[in-house]
Length: 90
Image (cartoon, one colour):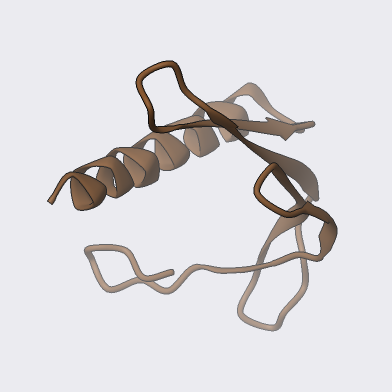
């Protein structure tokens, strides 16, 4: 991932579970330039039909070592999903 300032951020993970059209579970760990991974979290993405005829996406990520790490990930995911929503609306 490249920030607006041009900084590269690397991450790795493994798909743990995929249930077609319903759920994806994967591990997530930021890596340094040498490929060494930091603390690992588990991300679960669930998809369901919404009452409005679209798809409801629910994302859960745990467990975080610090509150600031949790808050930073929440901000990043919210920004990403907001961009996805805008893209899908066009």
